[in-house]
Amino acid sequence: MKISTNAAAQVSYKIQTNDKSGELIEFADSKNPRLLIFGNSSLIPGFETHMDGLQAGDDFEFSLNPEESFGSYRDELMVSVPKSAFMIDGVLKEDLLYLGNEISMLDNNSNVVSGRVIEINPDNVKMDFNHKLAGSGLFVTGTIHSVREVTADDLAPAGGCGSGCGCSSNKNESSCGTGEKSHDHAYEDDCPSCGNPAELRGKGHGNCGCG
Image (tube, rainbow, N blue to C red; front, side):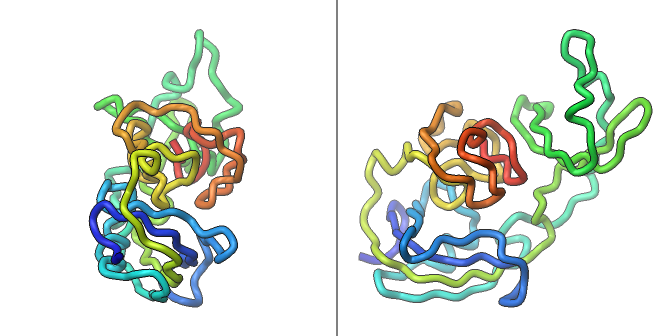
């Protein structure tokens, strides 16, 4: 069977920024391949395009431009947020406000978005809601170990962040495979994207949002 819509593939891979000399940002080795689901919008678009038609035993190598991965950097996603947004019961959560911290918040449409603190001012906090890899290309290499049809169990898996689990790393927390609102997963491993420890995965923390 070849990879197509509604296929599930066990894959080992490496993802680096820009080219083969770029920073390694995610990997799965042949002893612990990851299950990628095709056709349910759980993968970034470039993976769907470049891996279509591959089958067990095939090796692959491809580059993705920003539009095929996490998009171009958008200046309008740099936002000044009033400090009142970080208050709970009238108390400012100062433990959240440090440079580089990732904070999950609700946008105007009640979607969960993750932003990085880049500047702290007396009355507001400047945050960057671009994905941390926005504007960057990706270089992907790997091997297909098996391909089969998707099952119902595949659409409610027990882990992963953007690599076929359904919990898309650049979407809101309601995009967990089944389309239902987020629910608890029995995570046992650290997030392969951001390194989030197992006990925090699925809680909206970490650079990839793993929501």
